[in-house]
Image (cartoon, rainbow, N blue to C red):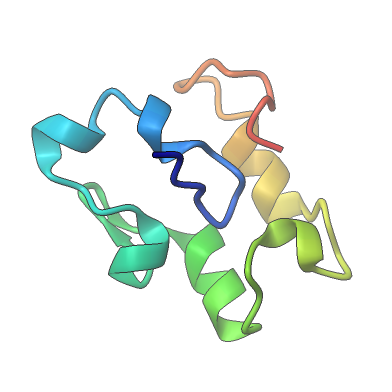
Length: 78
């Protein structure tokens, strides 16, 4: 079963999901195993299904999240 996050990340591909029992940002209201996700909180506050439905897509906040060197995905989440 595919589970997409507000940012577009496929949660079923996340290596931390099972080990942390993370339900995903949509199910948890943006409160993930690592803390609150500002991207998810933004979508929730705008009552959007996901970032792609936002007038400001892709915004600087989403770009900063998706291009985070620690994650190393080079923006594939967008």
